[in-house]
Length: 309
Image (cartoon, rainbow, N blue to C red; front, side, top):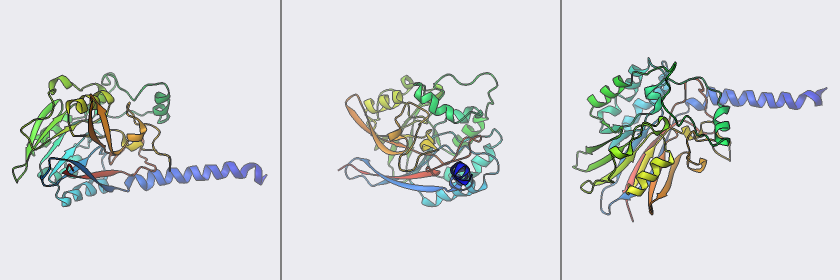
């Protein structure tokens, strides 16, 4: 009798412990990653860029809110927010409170699908099924029937009022205190086909000290366009780093057509005979209906940009 039921009970116990860890500890185990990227012209001083992404704020997430506020103590040169700030239509005030100290610094932002629409309850296994079938997340039109429209205009207006540059299918510039000029080119979220590369095509600005590309979801069509146009660095989010990963193996899905080997962190992308660095943030939140992370802790990233050798 013990042999018959011992193994299933053991597997159940391990599974329950894993779920408890993923939902009770790791999802709140916020980390700061530090990455160095050699993309600056020779002789230029290093620049420190804080990337925050996929906050997916829900009311009452006080630990996340305090952690985000604390990141301002890093005193980066500027902040890039790569979208999906919301997972609750009532959470705009708490999102702005969390980002308030960072909004006192120079910054720029793009939106993700969850800034526009509230999430829906989905079976997480569908992401793996979609991958096997060759489908990658929604990759379609914005939800229409029954979709909850988030108050993204309030988020946009507050970011703009703080001086952050909106990059949804737009270009913009940040001028730092020492006169350094950063040219930024961004796209609205490709995950729901709001990207319009034709509106920002033309490549990096020749009269800026540095040009960067920014987008929420790292779909290959977008990465190809940015890399072929000669951008040295692309910043993105969306993937949650796989969110539920297998230890010693990694992510199973990316929720877009990016390969799992580049689901988070620094890598490169080559298109049109040119190579760009790409940094994909694993983000610091989750969909409100799947509040778990496993072998993929929530994060923000401090990128130190250094001169090319």
